[in-house]
Length: 304
Image (cartoon, rainbow, N blue to C red):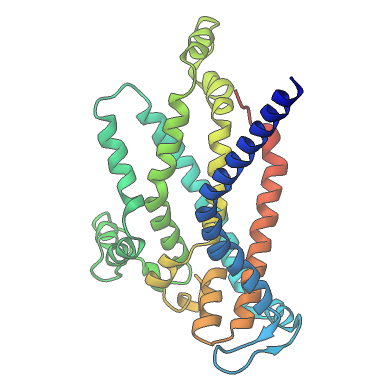
């Protein structure tokens, strides 16, 4: 009996080891990709931020000098202010509009799949192509928007050429392009709410506004939490539409954001050490804000 038990135990152990090896084998490709394209670049950014390097001459160790230069730079202060302005305006607009559209589409209407496709199409369209189209819409002389303004008796706006309007113009385009993604997420969350909750509330005499605040929003809290976290992260990474629509950072650097400043320092000025230091600071910004969001918002999320 003892020999049989020992053989059984050994067989189970070998089977467990085999399963472990198979599991790690399946994980290896994904792990290799993550290490190569995420962890190694992050480590290299930290490493290069301690050097003065122009990609050609040998690297010179300068310690934290790049960080002190960046923090004392006027361009950095402008970029931080513009970035936070972009996030503070674009994210709430996108959130509120997408929630409102999702609530409308959640009604019993025909052609729901068609409307989903219409709103989601800009999301999968190239940002460069969308930016080029919106540049024509914003054209101060032949653009559609100024034509409509003049048609109703208003003065034309210089849009991308005006420091007061350049960032707002980019924000409007960004909201339009990303709206469909959040609409689809909100629709999925709305359709996952148990209808019996609304039926019980209606029986108790709850008004539609009360149902929205007491049922819809609490039940949507996991979806809203995800959208807020990912939306803020993506807003901090805005670059393509800035580069296409307002090259050089816009009039009077009104659209100069942190990612665009990183690009300028690295590939225009060839100060890769300063660009790496900027990347590290951007990472710390995003990490700090995401941590704050989790600390404040996670306790308010209702998981059913």
